[in-house]
Amino acid sequence: MQTSRLRVAMVSLDFHREGGSEGRTGHLVDRLVHDGHEVHLVGGRIGGRWDPRIIQRPVWTPEHPHWLEVALFSRRAEAMVRAGGYDIVHNQIRPFVPGAVTVGGGSHRYYLNQVLARESGHMRAAVRRAMPLHRVLLALERRGFRPERCPYVIANSELNRQSILRYYPMAPERVVVAYNGVDSTRFSPALRALHREATRRILGLGPQDVGVLLVGQGFARKGLGVLLQALALVREPKWRLIVVGRGKAGAWSARAARLGLAGRVEFVGHVAAPEAYYAAADIFALPTFFDPFANATLEAMAVGLPIITSAQNGVAEILHPGVDGLVVDRPGDVHGLAAALTTLADAGTRAALGEHARETALQFTWDGPLERTLGVYREMVQAVQRQ
Image 1 (cartoon, rainbow, N blue to C red):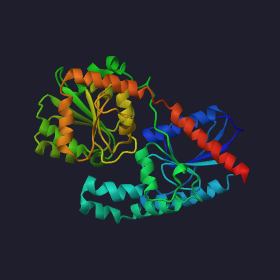
Image 2 (image 1 turned 135 degrees about the vertical axis):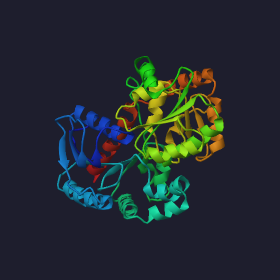
Image 3 (image 1 turned 60 degrees about the vertical axis):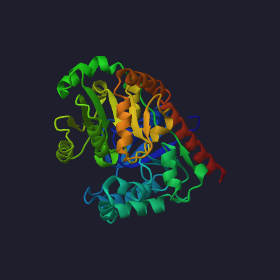
Image 4 (image 1 turned 90 degrees about the vertical axis):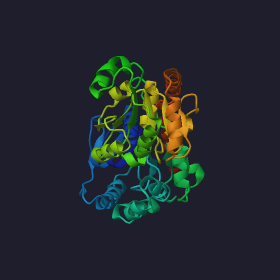
């Protein structure tokens, strides 16, 4: 970054390096420190390993109830930032304090209005919308996405960008897209030689079994229910589903059994490093109801897996359907998803799509989003200098 040394405040309720948005923050912080800038982490919880040159500024808040934690964190973080004399203030995920915002999860208002009912049903959606946490998050957005508080929004897809512009009065040129990246060395086809045989043995997968992998948190939103129904329609007894992530495995296992999939769905739970499961799988499926940019999709592509996802995953914007992945236009389309799975029943088709998926993933390194973010910083600094 060709500019003088900056004091930068990164603001987030949680700092760690697991997950797409969190990993993106980690890469940005590492780059800033490498370039000689002074970085402060203003956070409610700061976990993981960070360069010792980074200054950690914990903001104490009670963890429960969560709505109170969010409200108090926003207030206390703003007071800390205002007293800090920072050149750049950069919110991660939500607009807690005045400054730029990288929105990894999209607009919460968009999620509540456009996604929740399709994901959970109208009755559950109505109950959840009335919960204090959602009211607090909506108030945070209404205040935070005002032009006088938020000079720039950095979105990780056009889908994400539109979820902001649909509801908030931001100038379109101030809401920019910077797709996520992937470490194509960490996530590569070479993982198969290292992990495939042993991991498949642990999972109980035989040589002829086809492993379908879903990685993510929030199983309902990720489309697990749709995927179970589609697998039941495909009627391939050798196909097995592997689910990696936090969720209520018991209830979902019972649902799978009712669909005739008993013994064919393995819930692994949360893992910090999913590489072995990418290596063990033959197909990656994420029929999500809404994911601005599910990084697990890009990681699976980098490993060389054929991809099935929905148009409500921002990663679909970088795919060439039928070449490096398959896209189901409408989330919840069980028959469309079953048809996509059937297309991948042929091993040769899986291999061809997986090879092209790897080629596409190689175009998306972390350098791209980092440079775009640093460009936003330059524009913010220049705007202050012109005043």
